[in-house]
Length: 240
Image 1 (cartoon, rainbow, N blue to C red):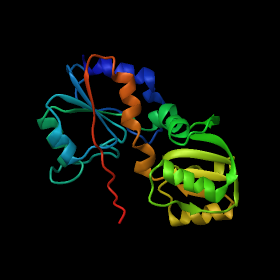
Image 2 (tube, rainbow, N blue to C red; image 1 turned 120 degrees about the vertical axis):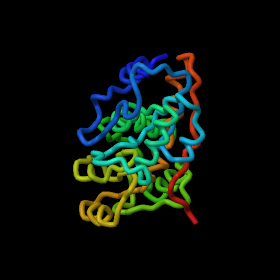
Image 3 (cartoon, rainbow, N blue to C red; image 1 turned 180 degrees about the horizontal axis):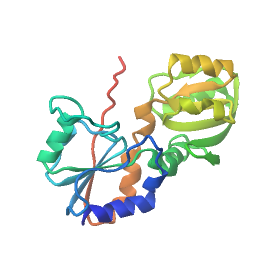
């Protein structure tokens, strides 16, 4: 199967036109006319993963390896060091990032991981009716994402309605219609701002909330007659 055929299927599943203007989803490395027999799915690209791949593999990732404009390819530096290895092994790469967040990832995390029905959807935000004490809800969330602890900003004792954005969503805080926000990459100043607008926060982690990308996508590719592998992606952070 040619990469173009797989790309067109992915585009039907989660249109690349939905990605944010700053994003870089789509075919990042490779040739649409290349024939592919093996597809590997991963949240990210790292050197260990590339070393483990067969030649002529199509690697479909959540995060784009090429994000900003590349002004040089110095092969001793990231990401050129990874691109160099990929090109030598004829490994292609398609990224599905903010388009997939909107069409699949938030929905899956809300319903399959947290176990709540989505009552409203607004772009990157899924709204959930909770109606529970904040402390109990925060513990449930930490358990669902297998977090070692619940990192929170507690602005209210009770959660009536929660908003969910996987990955990093704090830039959306002021537009939310909720009293608790679940997202990752919460910074100190995000926490201070949330307290000022009476919005509780629960940090669900960037990796932890997006690590389901591969298993979601695998279900849609299993009938293509291709070898589809889920890579064992690892969180770059360690809890000690």
